[in-house]
Image 1 (cartoon, rainbow, N blue to C red):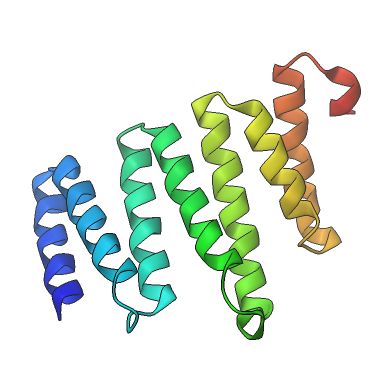
Image 2 (cartoon, helix red, strand yellow):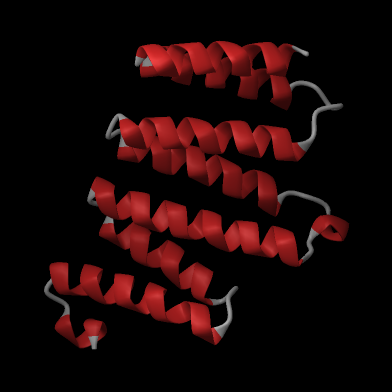
Length: 148
């Protein structure tokens, strides 16, 4: 009930363009969800992902990276019986988000590290895009050998 009310308020503030207020509401909601054992991890993850998207909209890339890292930590700390293909896919998507956001923040080392972690979790077909992203970052760093 509290989460639904916050989400309705967030929509109002998004329409008004008051994105700093939206982030504050997402902070409050994520704290609430973190402190209530009856809350699902999906609700907390969803709230944090929305918060990170607003941070990106405001060009707060480092903050968004930290928010995405919190999401990854939540996923990694789930019981082993929750580790299914869907969760692994969500984790690899989260790693991509961290990598892309880190790149936008100018943290190329972090971006490459997250992309490499993601490479270990996905199939060969999906690796092409990550290799291309990593090559661009290596070229930006003038590390042409790694880019090849």
